[in-house]
Length: 161
Image (cartoon, rainbow, N blue to C red):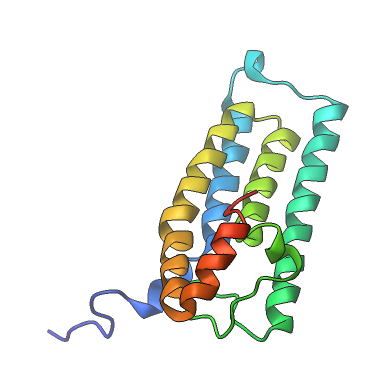
């Protein structure tokens, strides 16, 4: 019997282990929670719809600002790849992880828009997942590659806010 072409850490399946997939899975769960949770746990209305929409919009803007800044510096936006440059300007001067923060804002906004307050628990779970699967390994690679420059960046710029 032939061995599979991918052994160990499968590169052909790495596309599954990217933040948009995790956000998408969490969003589907939030949508389902919004459909099945008891009415007593709902808080809908025009204000929460507006707040949710603003959170989703702000999250998307954060992601776009970060993508533009990374492209401007000609470095990768793809997790699990080594960065060519340490980006500390633009939105990266405010938070070290604007794309992941944007993911969390989008999910929180969807919880509000879809009237699924119980789904807000998934925001914390997504945060923990992003931190363990992506942020910590990325920061380890940046620390090894950029040494003191990355240490200074970490001292002046928070991981989240």
